[in-house]
Length: 258
Image (tube, rainbow, N blue to C red):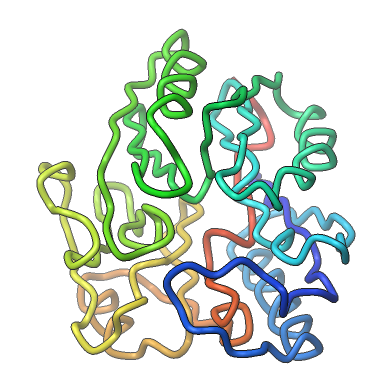
C-alpha cells in the first residue's frame, strides 16, 4: 500500500514564500478544509495517509514534498533553497526513518523536493532558483548506488520542475512547454496543458489509473481524460495562493522498501 506523508496547514500560511505568483492572502480556515479533502482524495486512491501536525511558525511547512526525496531504497533529506524552510525537515525525517534509511543534502548545496521528478530509474531535477548544481550532484551520488540516473533540467518562469511537468501515468507526462523544454522528456507521451490554464501541469499520480488535479483547470482535465486518464479534481485554491498544488502537499512512497 502506498503511504502519503502530509502535514496540516500552518496558521501563518499567509506569510508563505512566493516567487512567481502575486500575493493574495489565503483563507486559512478554507485551506484547512481543502487540505482535508486532499487527504481524503489520497485515501480514495488507496494511500495510507500519515498526518504530521502543523508547524505554525513555518508558513510553508504544509508543502512537505520539498524537504525529502523518497525512492524505493532510501530517503534523501534535502537542503531547501529558501533558508526559512530549513527547520521543516527534522520531523519529516523522523517519520520517514520508520520506512527508509536516510541520506542528507549538505550545505552549501541546495535542493527542493518539488524539483525532483522520478520516472522509474530516471530522475529529472529542475535547475533554477531553489536547486543548484551542488545539490543535484549530491542527490546523484546518493542515488547512483541504487541504479538511478539523475539529469538536471533547466526551468524558467516557475518555482519548481513539477510546476512545469509531472507524471500522470506509467509513460505519460503532463507538461507546460512555456516553462520547460520538451527535449529532456523524449520517449514519453506528453500531454500539454491547455494554453489558457498556465498553472495546470501539476498533477499527482500514485501509481493507479487516476490522478489528483486542481479543480480549477477543467480544460486541461478534459485533455487528460481524452488521453484515458481518470482525474480526481480537488479544490486547492487557497493553497494555490501560496504557490502550492497537488504534488507538494504530500510525499507518496511504497510502504515496503526494496
